[in-house]
Image (tube, rainbow, N blue to C red; front, side, top):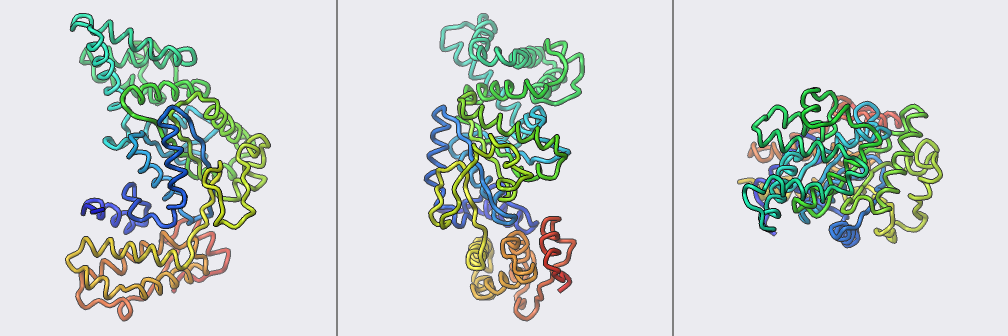
Length: 432
């Protein structure tokens, strides 16, 4: 299919920065085709009112974040809302579900709206309620009361667990209709789990205090009702880098693992129709005594057989294994990036000739060697070097030949903390 110049540039710009692109991942997908059928079937099941939990495992550099964003793009094409949350001890501790919910609303995005899409979603919901009320025969004078009745009816189940969710929505609508923008914004922030909302705004909406751990799941349930009534078919929630739980205090770790078990059980119970919950982590997190194995009920729920050849892994299982890159697959990805870059350049033929397939493979080997032969650690740095050090120069300078004019250098400052730790473990000299 034709690829727009804007999509190509977004992907290339992200790789130039050493980042995973936010979109356009289908242009780079290598080796993910074996997961497509199972993933699409699970997304379709969630879109029909089911709920799905999935865990992805892979070493650093194997493409866990890439996989999550590739899945997010497929979900958005099915009109899902998406939220990607980075789990961390200080910013988003998993054992505090109110913080997880807050990050979820902050990172909420749709195919039409960037983060945070909470307000457009809520506004679309009230518009849908008005349209339904008018379709039922309500006059303009009767419309406010009719919308109130519809809202109460559709949030009846949610109100059993989190009555303040409906109260906040009502307060937001009243402030909006009255033209009180500051109160409306504050009430919506409270609805999104933000702490320290002005007391006057909370009083106007008839709510108290801040959202707590126990109310977070009720608010998530309410958000799902709002999303689905607004025309969205579901919600993909990604909890990325859950392996960071291994580095927190033992009491916080135990609480976080139990919170994860609780989330999984709630998904399986059907409380969150339309939710697709994905977590990503390293094998050490799933298999080690400082991770999942620390809580037997959680380990039981995530148990998956990986003793067979990876070629025969079951993509329908609760866990997926990302095998990571080899030199061949890394070179193949580099060729894909080279062609994507050349397609957007006035000098595409020269780019393909100078940075030919053989050079792309040589660069992959060199970057892997610079990192102690750990090819699985190399993709981010390799693609950054390929775009910013090689392709950009070939594109701009007619006489630039990377075989003559470029010498690969890797310094500690351009590595992430994880990359530095992995290379240090092998006593690699990074000043090449």
